[in-house]
Image 1 (cartoon, helix red, strand yellow):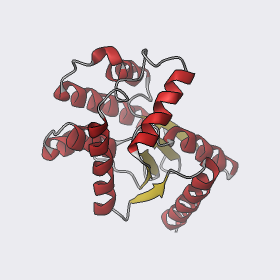
Image 2 (cartoon, rainbow, N blue to C red):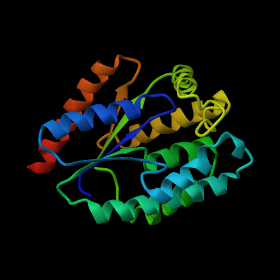
Image 3 (tube, helix red, strand yellow):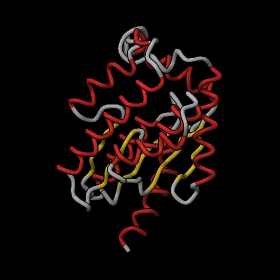
Length: 216
């Protein structure tokens, strides 16, 4: 998976929308694209996702949460390796950076433990490029909650993280920004407060620049 491009950011930052736009754009250019997500992306992973994101599971321990994410990732990597080639581009909605941001900075789990579990679950695979969509926490949560209401799932399938305290989400955002500052060559910070099309155009430039280097 030499062309694994991941999208990261807090709740409501617009990752899913931007992945779809980029996937459509790259397909028109003739690329073979696989769009996937964490947690989920596989039959087994989607079942784990339901457990992880269900608001009824508020009592889940931090370690349980971490291991469920890693189990989901291990299955995703296994299936991606079976169905994709080195020439294919994989667009993934969240990956190992999210585990560091949420479970390390948000939950306070030891970074060394998380890095080792990430390495095992991902089979050592790292993103070639990461797009970090950054915006104010209150704005992001407002978008996420509005999205859930629109989809009529506010109290149903996937609202557990939106119900976390504002302080938790602030820590997660700070975690993402720290990752970006430490790995600026791989992680490209993008202002997600702007309009969808403006953000898309910037992402296209970043990705096309990356692909030119990768193919040279």
